[in-house]
Image (tube, rainbow, N blue to C red; front, side, top):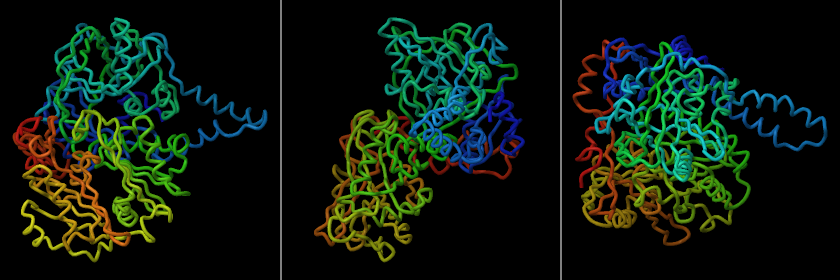
Length: 636
């Protein structure tokens, strides 16, 4: 369905008991984040902060669970969109034998045309109020985490266009506010807007930019969608809402924006101007992304609806609202991936703990040896999938939405020596584990059932994990640097053990890994994941989150080959923090995210006034204990 505006979405959330209005004063600096973090961790409601000290209420966590994400997209289940896209692809690409077959396409083509965005004359609702002196500081812009470089606009729908072709791009890049008419634009070098910027620089022209906030929530989703170059995000929005997006001309820039948006920020970037030092920022990885140089955005006009609502989000240690936006992408783009890239793919999952780009699980219909490797390489060669750090491929009847079932399947079907491959390539700019920025190692795991040609010996080497007994006391006595062992997954038939270690020398993990698999306790274990001694490895979800962020698989994966074709091979993966002293790591390492004690205690005191029901303790109480010394950048 198409929402008339953001207020319409808010009313719909409220009617479905998915929204709480908070009338108590809450400061946008740190306090809204602390409340939202507590609520998002328990998949709680959308929050409308009506008393922020500003003239505009703030909406957050509006898409923070499966049901609300579906509501934003106008469906009951996300897979409805997957099926619809698949059927559309089949209709348009199937064989057309005669004139009647071709005539049958006309209604579908007419439907597609009805989704295309349209520029309308006159002004839109988004221009009902024009600020005499544009001032972005009049809005309740969040400072999210203690070490953030300042307040950030976190849900900006940013419009740019190619100066040569005029083709529009709509993306989402955070904006740090530096003053009433100055922000930064945090677009990475892989992004389309960054390429537009480079073209304006070649031409010696200022780059017009417009930012929309609010309106139909589909606009927010479409701005995050990994569409191919040249595909208009508003066509996707039109398809999802089943109604074309109406655009209006900006007042001071040659850019068109949604007529029903709540707030429009117009301005320009001057490619001849020096960049500004932007960040740090508490990012979706659960770590700070560190400060760097980014373009300056000069604001020339701000307009808004009467009774506009300022939309925002926070990102951080999962689960957060962005996990559900990622879930929508997973389901919506499954169809195109199956139809155009790897038709053998049956399903695909991006687990929350993998924070989008760290881990993908794909299920295929397997017909021949090596097919899993073919799928991995296809995925690494496709658009933003190129940033994926680890790809796991399974087959059969395993439910890939059940983490334990997937882990069991991997345990049964993977021979580390033959079924794990390493490669390297472009990585997400936010991946702090790479030795070189935005370039690092990747790992593919073939967890499919094997054909004879794929086996190392006559039989698949299996580990009877339930029979393994880890003598933790004996292991820790021999290796005192090991501070804890979590072998609970062995009881579930999963041949994986978490080990926390306090590193004390160069090459420590690789050496320990080799010796550990020689012990009676570990000789029948396939996989060990090493984490720091400060981490609570009893929390498997947290352990996977920390591991997937901290590992460069090609650098940090240590395979121990089997003695013969009847024996198990092993792999150890180093998910610890990397340092210059012990790892020769030259880049800065970021800290994890946690609220300050003062903020936590204040929210504790006012909790009963918020109308949020039973008290939810702060997630940061756990993560404060895991903070490294230093601020956003960890001290050596």
